[in-house]
Image 1 (cartoon, rainbow, N blue to C red):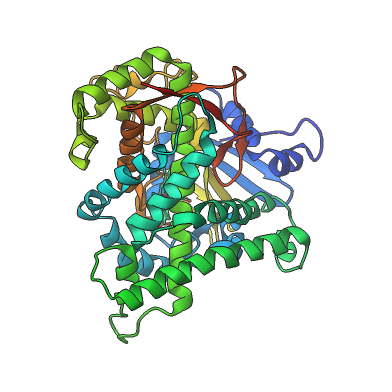
Image 2: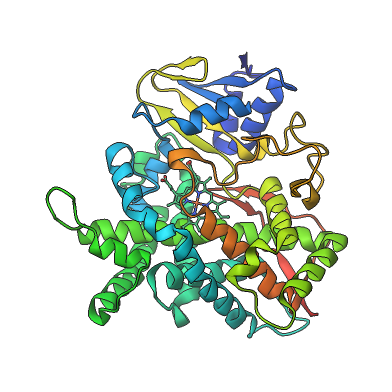
Length: 443
Ligand code: HEM
């Protein structure tokens, strides 16, 4: 194990607060090629461990005990997400995951495909050739509409813009988690906190409408909302409280669209800068779909489209790191971690480690082809993490990304409206640091 040494006292504390992505990259670099499978850094009183080798990463993700919980940043986000699947731990998490899993089965995802394509086409119906759009905002609104309809059977209609703005404000809470006094700040009526409270209330207003409409309409459906409303405790027969149902819906609505919107935004960004890749993607979409809209069955045939999305997720993983906190001493791989340790897997670093990736900074979707050389090494590519806390919506997200790209690429090219490369703003997800402006060109 290597320990990252600060160049001056307090350097690592500063870095952890200002730019954790840079800190993890420094840690990964300190590990060096193949040598450093784990790198430790002391951040004030905290001990941070970056797990940098696929075997160690696998051991961490497979862990099922109760000695590791979600890290402080996510626990702090309960102010927005409540205690839904993302922020819960232990027995409650296992119960919630069991309850929600059927809502993400293949059959359910297949049933959502039509909604994904129809809403994409509906959004693009308002596009005009030559117009410049902020593709990040456009993708957020689209994926928000898709999540509402596919998971909860609800239309967002005219409120999508307002709701998307509320979501953006609510998510600013994640930028606060680096502040050592965040717990206190979250309870004080500071202007920034009040804005977040208000945003959560705005999101809840929509979520209440979803629940009310379903209860009044009484339509039978196999979606997530029905699962939540019908859930009964095996022993007591008692259903979920309204607050529990609301937390679960807010969690899925937020995690289920923002990540996907970021993935799609970077996919368009890379496509616009790689005309050869774009041409090959167009050829595939035209050959597979012809004059009709893409369908769920096309998802497995659109292999190059999948490679393009995979490569965008490699270079710009929306969830750029996952962290766990040890609440007791815990053994992972051959290492014993002390109580209080923070264990991190940084997808952004792992996905570009020269030990596992040839020409790691190059956008080259072909590296994900089935016959590619060298073959993909397991646990070096983890945009959806894995194991019992891996992304429950992974299959949904792949289907959505591939269908949205195919449905839009049939009719449109998105051309970069600015030459300068777009930088990164690592928040809860790896967002672009400014609006991604693109010009719409009819194909
Ligand atoms: C490209 C899109 C997406 C990416 C990159 C992504 C990535 C991830 C990752 C890395 C995790 C694990 C976080 C951790 O271990 O701390 C996660 C968890 C989760 N994701 Fe996703 N996700 C995406 C889309 C979705 C969608 C579409 C949904 C729901 C419809 C969803 C719902 C969730 C939930 C509920 C969890 C928590 C699971 C648990 O703790 O049991 N995600 N996601």
